[in-house]
Length: 367
Image 1 (cartoon, rainbow, N blue to C red):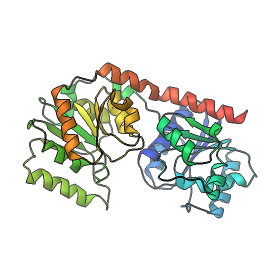
Image 2: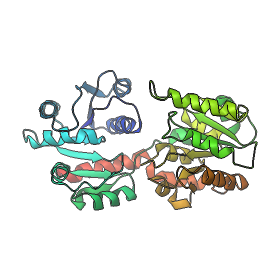
Image 3: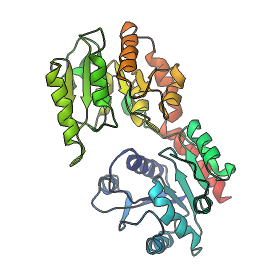
Image 4: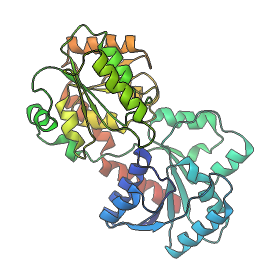
């Protein structure tokens, strides 16, 4: 049994925060003593409370050199007798590293990477901060190689552990007909889907522009999501205007987020990952866990997740023309990628296996 704390200073509720919550929940279920240090009145706090995970509210801290916050964190780690601190947000790295440098409490610091490195980080300050990390875990081999070449992090501390997924909900026997009825979309015909907040980075308009160029004028689209509050309303309005201007109301179906996302994945014939360069698309592995093929941008972590075209379609990022060609290729042979093969490939991300890898790393750093 390990005593583990998860630090998350973010107020948001996206993939990074969800992965902290999921891993905390899974490790608690496996018998470890778990506590989450996070912001008050956030979705992270709400989900931790629902799952009876110990949660301690912390004030907002600065990204760099917040020594007061580091002292406060050090006291929390002592009070909770924490032996391992897990962070995922680079904005939490400085305060965590400074807490470790205080040496009043011995603990291991583990960084689970969520975003790719934009530029090389080999300067003195980055190097000193990174040396406080006992682990730099990368969810993809591509990211591990990036860290090895773009930082001075000791290679023995750079490891590969995939992001975990509870596969069970995505492998339920729900049929396509049943899923489409639940989503209130047409029972017949090919449907593509894209899930994510309505935002330029997610590429909903890129997909809409692409289907205008696809010969199959019966092809439908399901857009699952919502605009970011006070941020994405204009983009959402642009989407709706495009649909109306091009008379796509009978082919494009906009639906709100839903907790049972497997209904969405099982209702569509292919999932489109239209982001310019997604570091690690959880929605990509969720779709494949349902046996749904993916059409993804040939950038970021998507090519590795799709085994470089062996388990999915790749198109040039931000090119509606190439996306249209790739969609056309899919429509000509929609059963090219077999459901069984996609689901078998996703077994590598099974949360039980991932937790075992995390446990092995925690144990290795304590001996």
